[in-house]
Length: 442
Image (cartoon, rainbow, N blue to C red; front, top):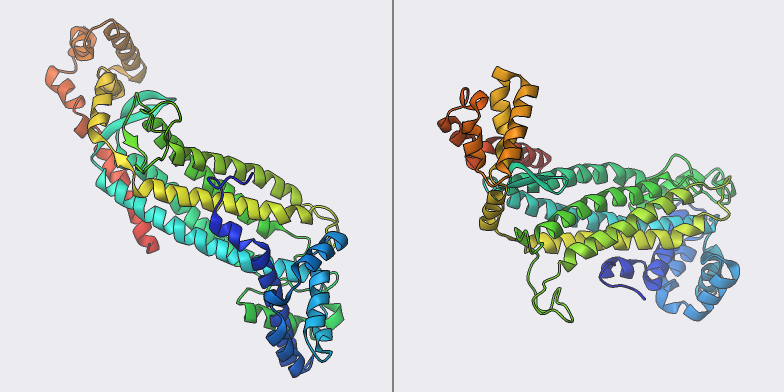
Protein backbone atom coordinates (compact mmCIF):
# COMPACT_ATOMS: atom_id res chain seq x y z
CA UNK A 1 0.00 0.00 0.00
CA UNK A 2 1.25 3.47 -0.89
CA UNK A 3 0.58 5.79 2.05
CA UNK A 4 -0.32 9.24 0.67
CA UNK A 5 0.09 10.84 4.11
CA UNK A 6 3.87 10.38 4.10
CA UNK A 7 4.66 10.82 0.40
CA UNK A 8 4.69 13.89 -1.82
CA UNK A 9 2.45 13.50 -4.86
CA UNK A 10 4.60 16.08 -6.65
CA UNK A 11 7.78 14.04 -6.16
CA UNK A 12 6.07 10.75 -6.99
CA UNK A 13 4.91 12.31 -10.26
CA UNK A 14 8.46 13.52 -10.94
CA UNK A 15 9.71 9.93 -10.69
CA UNK A 16 6.85 8.36 -12.63
CA UNK A 17 7.72 6.23 -15.63
CA UNK A 18 6.55 8.95 -18.01
CA UNK A 19 8.65 11.69 -16.44
CA UNK A 20 11.74 9.51 -16.10
CA UNK A 21 11.50 8.45 -19.76
CA UNK A 22 11.03 12.07 -20.79
CA UNK A 23 14.27 13.01 -19.03
CA UNK A 24 16.20 10.15 -20.64
CA UNK A 25 14.97 11.24 -24.05
CA UNK A 26 15.79 14.87 -23.29
CA UNK A 27 19.38 13.87 -22.59
CA UNK A 28 19.58 11.76 -25.77
CA UNK A 29 18.26 14.66 -27.85
CA UNK A 30 20.64 17.16 -26.22
CA UNK A 31 23.53 14.79 -26.85
CA UNK A 32 22.68 14.49 -30.55
CA UNK A 33 22.33 18.27 -30.90
CA UNK A 34 25.65 18.83 -29.17
CA UNK A 35 27.43 16.31 -31.37
CA UNK A 36 25.90 17.76 -34.52
CA UNK A 37 27.08 21.23 -33.51
CA UNK A 38 30.59 19.82 -33.17
CA UNK A 39 30.37 18.04 -36.56
CA UNK A 40 30.49 14.57 -35.05
CA UNK A 41 27.13 13.44 -36.45
CA UNK A 42 25.09 14.82 -39.39
CA UNK A 43 22.98 17.89 -38.64
CA UNK A 44 19.91 16.25 -40.20
CA UNK A 45 20.36 13.29 -37.82
CA UNK A 46 20.19 15.53 -34.77
CA UNK A 47 17.17 17.30 -36.24
CA UNK A 48 15.40 14.00 -36.95
CA UNK A 49 16.15 12.72 -33.45
CA UNK A 50 14.78 15.92 -31.88
CA UNK A 51 11.63 15.79 -34.03
CA UNK A 52 10.81 12.12 -33.56
CA UNK A 53 12.10 11.06 -30.15
CA UNK A 54 9.23 11.45 -27.71
CA UNK A 55 7.67 9.65 -24.78
CA UNK A 56 4.41 9.28 -26.66
CA UNK A 57 6.05 7.14 -29.34
CA UNK A 58 7.67 4.70 -26.92
CA UNK A 59 5.98 1.31 -26.66
CA UNK A 60 5.72 1.07 -22.90
CA UNK A 61 5.04 -2.66 -22.71
CA UNK A 62 8.05 -3.40 -24.88
CA UNK A 63 10.12 -0.92 -22.86
CA UNK A 64 9.24 -2.69 -19.59
CA UNK A 65 9.93 -6.12 -21.06
CA UNK A 66 13.36 -5.01 -22.28
CA UNK A 67 14.07 -3.37 -18.93
CA UNK A 68 13.23 -6.56 -17.06
CA UNK A 69 15.25 -8.75 -19.44
CA UNK A 70 18.35 -6.55 -19.75
CA UNK A 71 18.32 -5.24 -16.19
CA UNK A 72 18.69 -1.61 -17.35
CA UNK A 73 16.21 0.74 -19.04
CA UNK A 74 18.36 2.46 -21.65
CA UNK A 75 19.22 -0.43 -23.99
CA UNK A 76 15.59 -1.06 -24.92
CA UNK A 77 14.81 2.65 -25.08
CA UNK A 78 17.70 3.33 -27.46
CA UNK A 79 16.62 0.42 -29.66
CA UNK A 80 13.13 1.88 -29.94
CA UNK A 81 14.39 5.41 -30.61
CA UNK A 82 16.71 4.07 -33.31
CA UNK A 83 13.68 2.52 -35.01
CA UNK A 84 11.44 5.57 -34.51
CA UNK A 85 13.83 8.06 -36.11
CA UNK A 86 13.36 7.67 -39.90
CA UNK A 87 15.72 7.28 -42.86
CA UNK A 88 18.30 5.31 -40.91
CA UNK A 89 19.23 8.40 -38.92
CA UNK A 90 18.31 6.64 -35.71
CA UNK A 91 21.73 5.01 -35.80
CA UNK A 92 23.13 8.26 -34.36
CA UNK A 93 21.09 8.02 -31.18
CA UNK A 94 23.27 7.43 -28.09
CA UNK A 95 26.47 8.12 -30.08
CA UNK A 96 29.50 7.31 -27.89
CA UNK A 97 27.39 7.21 -24.72
CA UNK A 98 26.72 4.52 -22.15
CA UNK A 99 23.60 3.60 -20.18
CA UNK A 100 24.68 5.24 -16.96
CA UNK A 101 25.39 8.54 -18.72
CA UNK A 102 21.74 8.80 -19.68
CA UNK A 103 20.40 7.56 -16.37
CA UNK A 104 22.60 9.73 -14.18
CA UNK A 105 22.12 12.88 -16.23
CA UNK A 106 18.38 12.23 -16.35
CA UNK A 107 18.37 11.68 -12.60
CA UNK A 108 20.18 14.95 -11.97
CA UNK A 109 17.62 16.80 -14.10
CA UNK A 110 14.92 15.40 -11.83
CA UNK A 111 16.88 16.19 -8.69
CA UNK A 112 17.22 19.79 -9.83
CA UNK A 113 13.45 20.05 -9.47
CA UNK A 114 13.66 18.34 -6.09
CA UNK A 115 16.28 20.83 -4.91
CA UNK A 116 14.30 23.78 -6.27
CA UNK A 117 11.06 22.64 -4.60
CA UNK A 118 12.87 21.89 -1.37
CA UNK A 119 14.46 25.32 -1.35
CA UNK A 120 11.21 27.11 -2.18
CA UNK A 121 9.22 25.30 0.51
CA UNK A 122 12.00 25.70 3.05
CA UNK A 123 12.05 29.44 2.35
CA UNK A 124 8.30 29.66 2.98
CA UNK A 125 8.64 27.78 6.27
CA UNK A 126 11.51 30.01 7.36
CA UNK A 127 9.44 33.10 6.56
CA UNK A 128 6.52 31.77 8.56
CA UNK A 129 8.71 30.88 11.54
CA UNK A 130 10.22 34.37 11.47
CA UNK A 131 6.73 35.81 11.79
CA UNK A 132 5.84 33.46 14.67
CA UNK A 133 9.10 34.22 16.49
CA UNK A 134 8.56 37.95 16.13
CA UNK A 135 4.88 37.88 17.09
CA UNK A 136 5.53 35.80 20.21
CA UNK A 137 8.84 37.31 21.35
CA UNK A 138 7.05 38.39 24.58
CA UNK A 139 4.63 35.46 24.92
CA UNK A 140 5.64 33.99 28.26
CA UNK A 141 5.76 30.21 28.44
CA UNK A 142 7.73 27.57 30.26
CA UNK A 143 10.96 26.05 29.05
CA UNK A 144 11.08 22.32 29.62
CA UNK A 145 14.06 20.11 30.42
CA UNK A 146 13.62 16.33 30.10
CA UNK A 147 9.83 16.94 29.88
CA UNK A 148 9.84 18.79 33.21
CA UNK A 149 9.17 22.48 33.73
CA UNK A 150 12.52 24.26 33.98
CA UNK A 151 12.62 28.08 33.64
CA UNK A 152 10.46 30.65 31.83
CA UNK A 153 11.09 31.38 28.17
CA UNK A 154 8.95 32.85 25.43
CA UNK A 155 7.17 31.02 22.67
CA UNK A 156 9.00 33.31 20.27
CA UNK A 157 12.29 31.98 21.64
CA UNK A 158 11.14 28.40 21.01
CA UNK A 159 10.14 29.30 17.44
CA UNK A 160 13.48 31.06 16.95
CA UNK A 161 15.23 27.82 17.86
CA UNK A 162 13.28 26.02 15.15
CA UNK A 163 14.04 28.87 12.76
CA UNK A 164 17.80 28.87 13.40
CA UNK A 165 18.09 25.17 12.57
CA UNK A 166 16.26 25.66 9.27
CA UNK A 167 18.43 28.65 8.41
CA UNK A 168 21.43 26.37 8.68
CA UNK A 169 19.72 23.93 6.33
CA UNK A 170 19.18 26.74 3.81
CA UNK A 171 22.92 27.28 3.83
CA UNK A 172 23.62 23.55 3.42
CA UNK A 173 21.25 23.36 0.46
CA UNK A 174 22.93 26.31 -1.25
CA UNK A 175 26.32 24.68 -0.76
CA UNK A 176 25.41 21.22 -2.05
CA UNK A 177 23.57 22.43 -5.15
CA UNK A 178 26.63 22.95 -7.43
CA UNK A 179 28.19 19.66 -6.30
CA UNK A 180 25.00 17.74 -7.07
CA UNK A 181 23.76 19.33 -10.28
CA UNK A 182 26.46 18.10 -12.65
CA UNK A 183 26.05 16.31 -15.95
CA UNK A 184 27.27 12.74 -16.35
CA UNK A 185 28.92 11.83 -19.63
CA UNK A 186 31.91 9.55 -19.85
CA UNK A 187 31.21 6.57 -22.05
CA UNK A 188 32.04 2.97 -21.18
CA UNK A 189 34.32 3.51 -18.17
CA UNK A 190 34.26 7.28 -17.99
CA UNK A 191 37.32 8.16 -20.11
CA UNK A 192 35.35 9.44 -23.15
CA UNK A 193 37.56 7.17 -25.25
CA UNK A 194 34.88 6.48 -27.88
CA UNK A 195 34.79 10.16 -28.81
CA UNK A 196 38.47 11.05 -28.40
CA UNK A 197 39.65 13.78 -28.91
CA UNK A 198 36.21 15.44 -28.84
CA UNK A 199 34.79 13.83 -25.72
CA UNK A 200 35.44 16.72 -23.36
CA UNK A 201 33.87 19.16 -25.82
CA UNK A 202 30.79 16.93 -26.05
CA UNK A 203 30.52 16.78 -22.27
CA UNK A 204 30.87 20.52 -22.00
CA UNK A 205 28.26 21.16 -24.69
CA UNK A 206 25.86 18.66 -23.17
CA UNK A 207 26.20 20.33 -19.77
CA UNK A 208 25.43 23.71 -21.33
CA UNK A 209 22.36 22.45 -23.17
CA UNK A 210 20.99 20.83 -20.02
CA UNK A 211 21.98 23.82 -17.88
CA UNK A 212 24.03 21.60 -15.57
CA UNK A 213 27.52 21.90 -14.19
CA UNK A 214 30.42 20.06 -15.80
CA UNK A 215 32.49 17.68 -13.68
CA UNK A 216 36.23 17.33 -14.02
CA UNK A 217 35.89 13.54 -14.21
CA UNK A 218 33.09 11.03 -14.62
CA UNK A 219 31.33 10.13 -11.38
CA UNK A 220 29.82 6.79 -12.44
CA UNK A 221 30.93 5.05 -9.24
CA UNK A 222 31.59 8.10 -7.08
CA UNK A 223 28.17 8.76 -5.59
CA UNK A 224 29.11 11.16 -2.81
CA UNK A 225 27.05 14.05 -4.19
CA UNK A 226 23.92 11.93 -4.38
CA UNK A 227 24.59 10.58 -0.89
CA UNK A 228 25.13 14.15 0.29
CA UNK A 229 21.66 15.13 -0.93
CA UNK A 230 19.95 12.24 0.84
CA UNK A 231 21.99 12.82 3.99
CA UNK A 232 21.02 16.48 3.85
CA UNK A 233 17.38 15.44 3.61
CA UNK A 234 17.92 13.26 6.67
CA UNK A 235 19.27 16.25 8.59
CA UNK A 236 16.52 18.53 7.33
CA UNK A 237 13.70 16.15 8.18
CA UNK A 238 15.29 15.54 11.57
CA UNK A 239 14.86 19.24 12.30
CA UNK A 240 11.32 19.16 10.92
CA UNK A 241 10.51 16.20 13.15
CA UNK A 242 11.89 18.12 16.14
CA UNK A 243 9.38 20.91 15.39
CA UNK A 244 6.56 18.39 14.98
CA UNK A 245 7.51 16.61 18.21
CA UNK A 246 7.44 19.87 20.19
CA UNK A 247 4.07 20.80 18.74
CA UNK A 248 2.63 17.33 19.33
CA UNK A 249 3.67 17.46 22.99
CA UNK A 250 2.42 21.02 23.43
CA UNK A 251 -0.94 19.96 21.98
CA UNK A 252 -1.52 17.25 24.60
CA UNK A 253 -4.80 17.67 26.48
CA UNK A 254 -2.94 18.27 29.76
CA UNK A 255 -0.78 20.98 28.14
CA UNK A 256 -2.95 22.59 25.46
CA UNK A 257 -0.56 25.41 24.62
CA UNK A 258 -0.86 24.99 20.84
CA UNK A 259 -3.11 23.13 18.44
CA UNK A 260 -2.68 22.01 14.86
CA UNK A 261 -4.75 23.83 12.22
CA UNK A 262 -8.39 22.82 12.35
CA UNK A 263 -9.88 21.24 9.24
CA UNK A 264 -13.02 19.29 8.51
CA UNK A 265 -12.53 15.69 9.57
CA UNK A 266 -8.80 16.05 10.30
CA UNK A 267 -7.51 13.98 13.20
CA UNK A 268 -10.90 12.62 14.19
CA UNK A 269 -11.25 9.35 16.07
CA UNK A 270 -13.47 6.51 14.89
CA UNK A 271 -14.77 6.01 18.42
CA UNK A 272 -13.99 9.12 20.53
CA UNK A 273 -15.70 12.23 19.14
CA UNK A 274 -13.89 14.55 21.55
CA UNK A 275 -10.42 13.75 20.21
CA UNK A 276 -8.40 15.97 17.90
CA UNK A 277 -5.36 13.95 17.00
CA UNK A 278 -2.16 15.77 15.94
CA UNK A 279 -2.02 13.97 12.61
CA UNK A 280 0.15 16.47 10.75
CA UNK A 281 2.83 16.19 13.42
CA UNK A 282 2.62 12.41 13.33
CA UNK A 283 2.98 12.30 9.55
CA UNK A 284 6.04 14.57 9.68
CA UNK A 285 7.68 12.39 12.33
CA UNK A 286 6.98 9.15 10.42
CA UNK A 287 8.25 10.58 7.11
CA UNK A 288 11.42 11.80 8.83
CA UNK A 289 12.05 8.39 10.38
CA UNK A 290 11.81 6.79 6.95
CA UNK A 291 14.26 9.29 5.48
CA UNK A 292 16.78 8.55 8.23
CA UNK A 293 16.56 4.84 7.39
CA UNK A 294 17.02 5.66 3.70
CA UNK A 295 20.12 7.73 4.54
CA UNK A 296 21.78 4.62 5.95
CA UNK A 297 20.92 2.65 2.82
CA UNK A 298 22.15 5.44 0.57
CA UNK A 299 25.49 5.49 2.35
CA UNK A 300 25.68 1.75 1.79
CA UNK A 301 24.95 2.29 -1.91
CA UNK A 302 27.96 4.62 -2.17
CA UNK A 303 30.38 1.70 -2.01
CA UNK A 304 30.69 0.70 -5.67
CA UNK A 305 33.33 -1.33 -7.44
CA UNK A 306 35.81 -0.08 -10.00
CA UNK A 307 34.40 2.06 -12.85
CA UNK A 308 30.84 0.65 -12.93
CA UNK A 309 29.00 -0.62 -9.89
CA UNK A 310 27.78 -4.19 -10.12
CA UNK A 311 25.16 -4.33 -7.37
CA UNK A 312 24.82 -1.18 -5.28
CA UNK A 313 23.97 1.37 -7.99
CA UNK A 314 20.58 -0.25 -8.51
CA UNK A 315 19.69 0.46 -4.86
CA UNK A 316 19.44 4.14 -5.76
CA UNK A 317 16.61 3.53 -8.22
CA UNK A 318 14.13 3.13 -5.38
CA UNK A 319 16.05 4.82 -2.55
CA UNK A 320 16.27 8.25 -4.14
CA UNK A 321 12.61 8.51 -5.22
CA UNK A 322 11.45 7.25 -1.83
CA UNK A 323 13.73 9.47 0.25
CA UNK A 324 12.95 12.60 -1.75
CA UNK A 325 9.21 11.86 -1.65
CA UNK A 326 9.20 11.37 2.13
CA UNK A 327 11.36 14.44 2.71
CA UNK A 328 9.35 16.82 0.54
CA UNK A 329 6.16 15.45 2.09
CA UNK A 330 7.53 16.36 5.53
CA UNK A 331 8.30 19.86 4.27
CA UNK A 332 4.81 20.25 2.83
CA UNK A 333 3.22 19.07 6.08
CA UNK A 334 5.35 21.43 8.20
CA UNK A 335 4.38 24.35 5.98
CA UNK A 336 0.71 23.50 6.47
CA UNK A 337 1.19 22.95 10.18
CA UNK A 338 2.85 26.31 10.79
CA UNK A 339 0.60 28.34 8.51
CA UNK A 340 -2.43 27.52 10.64
CA UNK A 341 -0.82 26.83 14.02
CA UNK A 342 -3.05 27.89 16.91
CA UNK A 343 -1.10 29.41 19.82
CA UNK A 344 -2.73 29.82 23.26
CA UNK A 345 -0.76 32.33 25.38
CA UNK A 346 -3.29 32.23 28.22
CA UNK A 347 -2.80 28.47 28.63
CA UNK A 348 0.96 28.99 28.67
CA UNK A 349 0.55 31.39 31.60
CA UNK A 350 -1.69 28.92 33.40
CA UNK A 351 0.85 26.14 32.99
CA UNK A 352 3.55 28.36 34.45
CA UNK A 353 1.47 28.66 37.61
CA UNK A 354 1.39 24.88 37.99
CA UNK A 355 5.06 24.98 38.89
CA UNK A 356 4.28 26.75 42.18
CA UNK A 357 6.95 29.34 41.25
CA UNK A 358 9.66 26.67 41.15
CA UNK A 359 10.58 27.80 37.62
CA UNK A 360 12.28 30.78 39.29
CA UNK A 361 14.50 28.62 41.52
CA UNK A 362 17.55 29.01 39.27
CA UNK A 363 17.15 32.80 39.27
CA UNK A 364 16.98 32.82 43.09
CA UNK A 365 20.10 30.67 43.26
CA UNK A 366 22.02 32.98 40.94
CA UNK A 367 20.93 36.02 42.94
CA UNK A 368 22.32 34.41 46.11
CA UNK A 369 25.49 33.04 44.53
CA UNK A 370 27.60 36.23 44.55
CA UNK A 371 27.24 36.36 48.34
CA UNK A 372 27.04 32.69 49.35
CA UNK A 373 28.84 30.95 46.52
CA UNK A 374 27.04 28.95 43.82
CA UNK A 375 27.03 25.55 45.55
CA UNK A 376 25.76 26.80 48.92
CA UNK A 377 23.12 28.87 47.16
CA UNK A 378 22.09 25.81 45.16
CA UNK A 379 21.75 23.68 48.30
CA UNK A 380 19.71 26.29 50.14
CA UNK A 381 17.29 26.76 47.26
CA UNK A 382 17.02 23.00 46.72
CA UNK A 383 16.04 22.58 50.37
CA UNK A 384 13.48 25.38 50.03
CA UNK A 385 11.95 23.67 47.02
CA UNK A 386 11.65 20.41 48.93
CA UNK A 387 9.98 22.22 51.82
CA UNK A 388 7.58 24.08 49.54
CA UNK A 389 6.48 20.83 47.94
CA UNK A 390 4.68 20.04 51.18
CA UNK A 391 1.89 22.49 50.36
CA UNK A 392 3.69 25.75 51.12
CA UNK A 393 4.30 28.72 48.87
CA UNK A 394 7.84 28.79 47.52
CA UNK A 395 8.29 32.50 48.24
CA UNK A 396 7.08 32.07 51.81
CA UNK A 397 9.64 29.32 52.40
CA UNK A 398 12.40 31.47 50.93
CA UNK A 399 11.49 34.39 53.18
CA UNK A 400 11.41 32.11 56.20
CA UNK A 401 14.92 30.84 55.46
CA UNK A 402 17.23 33.19 57.32
CA UNK A 403 20.27 32.63 55.12
CA UNK A 404 18.16 33.64 52.12
CA UNK A 405 15.99 36.45 53.53
CA UNK A 406 19.09 38.09 54.96
CA UNK A 407 20.27 38.64 51.38
CA UNK A 408 17.08 38.87 49.33
CA UNK A 409 14.13 40.95 50.47
CA UNK A 410 10.53 40.27 49.59
CA UNK A 411 10.79 43.02 46.99
CA UNK A 412 13.88 41.34 45.51
CA UNK A 413 12.07 38.02 45.28
CA UNK A 414 8.98 39.57 43.71
CA UNK A 415 11.21 41.13 41.08
CA UNK A 416 12.81 37.73 40.44
CA UNK A 417 9.38 36.09 40.26
CA UNK A 418 8.24 38.55 37.61
CA UNK A 419 8.09 36.28 34.59
CA UNK A 420 8.17 39.11 32.06
CA UNK A 421 11.38 40.48 33.52
CA UNK A 422 12.88 37.02 33.72
CA UNK A 423 12.82 36.44 29.96
CA UNK A 424 14.37 39.71 28.75
CA UNK A 425 17.30 37.82 27.19
CA UNK A 426 14.93 35.71 25.08
CA UNK A 427 13.91 38.73 23.03
CA UNK A 428 17.53 39.58 22.29
CA UNK A 429 18.13 36.03 21.10
CA UNK A 430 15.08 36.21 18.85
CA UNK A 431 16.46 39.42 17.34
CA UNK A 432 19.81 37.71 16.75
CA UNK A 433 18.19 34.83 14.89
CA UNK A 434 16.01 37.14 12.81
CA UNK A 435 19.05 39.24 11.90
CA UNK A 436 20.69 36.15 10.39
CA UNK A 437 17.71 35.81 8.09
CA UNK A 438 17.87 39.48 7.14
CA UNK A 439 21.59 39.22 6.28
CA UNK A 440 20.87 36.29 3.99
CA UNK A 441 18.27 38.33 2.14
CA UNK A 442 15.35 35.99 2.69
